[in-house]
Length: 324
Image 1 (cartoon, rainbow, N blue to C red):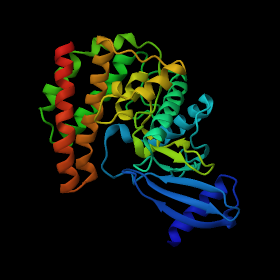
Image 2: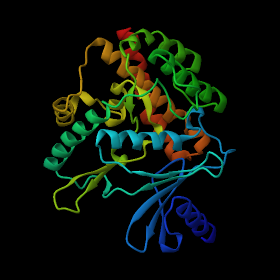
Image 3: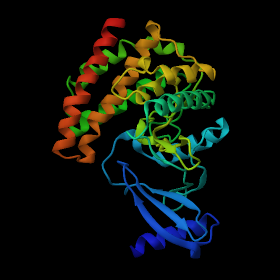
């Protein structure tokens, strides 16, 4: 406890905030990689502090310097006018790595919402995601530099991303439903469809319900913030539809798509778009299957991933085969 308070005070002071006003520290759960704490000051202001694991901690290649990517997402979200944490301070250039940000109101999206609330909030979410997708970047790929510099084109960037997670799968001996080399060939056969993407746009890539905060403080439920942007990249906005319909099909989410299109988002599902979506589904499911090894998730979680995620990867690969 003492070390946590000492660290929090030191980071607050570095950020220009009064360390003596730290009143409470509360660990936040739900994350799978970084340690996360809520810092509450005596004036009631709330901040969130993220600390990455020690450098020697096992992880996937793309997870290096995740906080750099997360800070980039929040900067871009502010540019888009979308509710998200505001970066207060980012450490790590010369000292300890950390990300200090403001806290957003609300709690993760859960089963307490009525059907009417769900429809209204999904439409609101669609409009917000469309605004995110207007933000463009300087190149394609992860801004953290975890996989090297940003690429000049999307096929090059995505191939590097897919190759990296397949290399991780080989290195950790992950249980994939097909051998990694076979998966690589199946993905590579469809990379020509990526040529359609010519502008690098902001992609959160982790917008499942747990990263969407719902705020009821003003009465009617609204979206309080989009959080945990650490897995963002510059690429094809269509990729966001994978986590927005995790293990499902975004085409059935009519309220979201209506809001997305109403705000100017392009959401067509012709054959090239379906092929790209299948590639992005395969990429996410490869990550979910592979990360169980360095995370040491335990038998229950491993069993769920094998029973639920592995068939979804197979389905994505089959769709790629049929559409290619």
